[in-house]
Image (cartoon, rainbow over all chains, first blue to last red; front, side, top):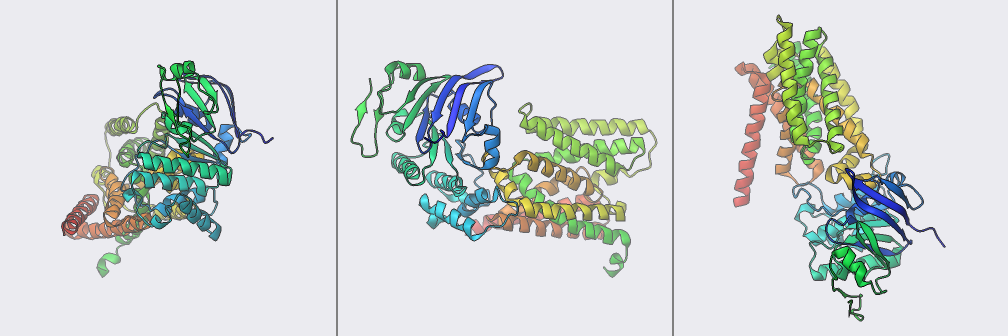
Amino acid sequence: MPEPAVIIRDLTVAYDGNIVLEDINLEVARGEIMSVVGPNGSGKSTLLRAIMGFKRPAKGSILVLGRSPDEIQKTGLIGYLPQNMNYDQNFPVSAFDIVAMSRYSRKGIERLGPEDRAAINGSLEKVKMQSQTDKHFGSLSGGQKQRVLIARALAMKPSILILDEPSIGLDVVAQDSFYRLLQKLRDDEGLTIILVSHDIGGVSGVVDKIACVKRQMHFYGSPKDCIPSTALEKTFGTNVYFLSHDSECGTCRRDK
Amino acid sequence: MTELLGMRFFTNALVMCLLLSFLFGTLSFFVVMRRMSFLGAGVSHAAFGGVAIGILLGIDPFYTSFVFCTLSAVLLGKLVKSGNISYDTGIGILFSFSMALGAIFIALKKKYTFDLMGYLFGNILGVTSFDMMVSLATTAVFIPFIFACMHKILFMTFDEEVAAVSGVRTGLLDTVMLIFLAAIIVISIKIVGIILISALVVLPASFGILLTKNYRRVIAAGIAYTLAIMVGGLLLSYYLDLPTGATIVSLGTAVYFVFIGLNAVKRSH
């Protein structure tokens, strides 16, 4: 049994003395998709930042692929898609340039070899953006930009893909296609994927594990298990109803 | 022209223009794209405090302004990174504090013989062989650095956090870039002047972006533009007997706005 990709024990994170996350415990197995859900300000993005080493825990420990978050930053084993998509529209780079950034990041001498070009073109193909490689990044639609940024993360050949609110700004069709892409990456490449979402209905049919977080962890398990209404109430402040869709839409259900 | 090229100070200034064109043309891209244009103004004004310390202590102002600018830029960078202060606030404070400090130090000196206007607005007569050698040395270090790290800096400029998690040593690169910014500003004080240097930090990349959406071409256009306005400004300032820095910056701004106009006309067709 391989070691889990991420192990978090008794994690507490605070900003200026205010506790944002408290006593979080979870393990993300290799090759599974795990989603952290919760309302705005619940600490979801903070959890990702702690995993990536941008926020030091006040208490507890985090191990990512057997290393500390500080160490994992230097390895380039994490592909990251940030929530903030407010890039400068005039930034003079093409889709290819964006994806190439990740290949340059760990090179001593900055020169792209055939292997790098194959990785860049292959990643653009995976996200179905191969016909847009020379397009100016700022001229692409929101969904296309997101695909290019995922291609950048994939070109690095990461072991873990971390996505912060990836469905924001995507219409229903683009969301569906995006979630299918994530499942394909998990199935074909064995990628471990951690994503943050406030849309519990959208992700619950796609992911293997779900973590309901609002300061504390109120549920952690398979979305196929019925999430207790008390956990949803503690996470979202009210007993929310949600429709869960799997990829075939065969098991729509309503949780009460 | 032949007569001009026979003058040592002019050939020194011309060589410095060539070197500074490469330095500003490249550096400007990363400063402008990181939306840190105001930093150029802050660091160049910090040079005034450094120059004044040199004058007060009787040390060559080049050394004191280099130390003062580098410390100011790096310290400001660290304070902003730590989240204690925003760039705008930090630069606003640094800007006025350095100028105030400079005014106090110069007042303390009472009697001085240096060319204050030359420091503030540039004077090619002040350019020495030493200045040229320092520019040459800075360029000799800057070129290999940019060739070795350009794409990592590009990644950091586009998306700092993702670059960091992808293995780019963003903290180190940021510090090195700030040191280069301080060095390039200090070596260009004599030609352009403290008050006007920030224009050379902003204009080259802003001009390049008007022409192309390819970062390599933006940098190349920025270098060519800086060379054209520096050499053009230098010649104009000599023949019209005008302050060098002011002439370079006025010419650069005029060219920039002409191209904005041409772009608007092109778009309307």
